[in-house]
Image 1 (cartoon, one colour):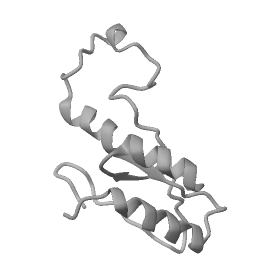
Image 2: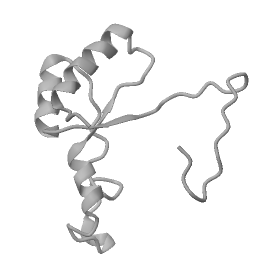
Image 3: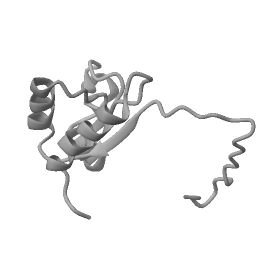
Image 4: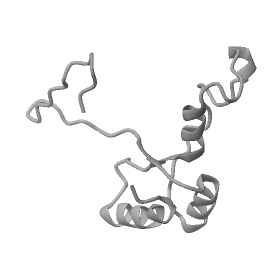
Length: 107
C-alpha cells in the first residue's frame, strides 16, 4: 500500500529475499491468549507492551501520561506477534493460526 508522500517500494525477487522479522496480529483478550498459548506450547510474541520503547522505561521520564496516545495504547493491549523464525514448519504455522483465530474478530 502506497501512502501519500512515500515512494513506491520496488521488489525484485532476483536480487532480494526478504525475511519477515515480526508478524503482528491484533487480537481480543491478549492476556488470555498469551496464557493459553504458553500452556498449549504455541509461541506468540508480546513485543508491543508500551506505547514507548523500551517497555521498562518509566513513561513519566518522557512526559508521557496515559491517554496521550489512545490508539497506540489500544494496540499494546491487542497486538501479538506470530513466530517467523526458520524452525516454524507448516504444521506449526497452521496450529498457530488455528489457535489465534479464536481470539480475532471478523472484519
